[in-house]
Image 1 (cartoon, rainbow, N blue to C red):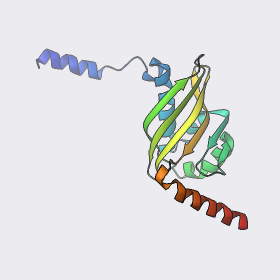
Image 2 (image 1 turned 90 degrees about the vertical axis):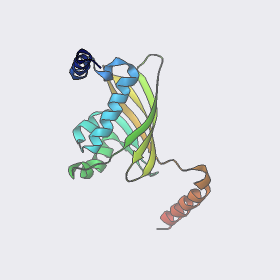
Image 3 (image 1 turned 135 degrees about the vertical axis):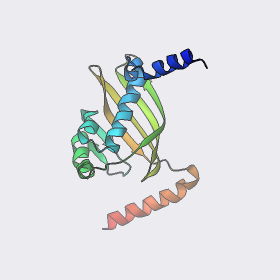
Length: 165
């Protein structure tokens, strides 16, 4: 490679990108919001994390009892954020779809998590002005079909034990 080509390559890679990738396409914008939301949790940035929700958002956790409004979820999560370590979910893949008018997006993503292992998230975002906000998020732990019978029995036994308390 010539010196001129190397210089051009260096200038191209050093020049700031003036177009924000998040704004380049609707899918990129949704991905940027979701990626930042996950990063905010990993960085224990409570304000940024909960700022990605609509005021009436719902978070569905992995436990059957975990259906929270945004504010209920924030109260539950506050001790984790206060300790400076919330949770770390790394998206491995994500699929995003949009309503015909482009005002609603829904997605599903596979996640790598240090505490739960493989997980799945799905949800709905709505456009609030020019900003995408999470209206619902559903976190789940996929169970392989081969293990379903065992887990079903264990869940039923757990529920029976809980009712007997």
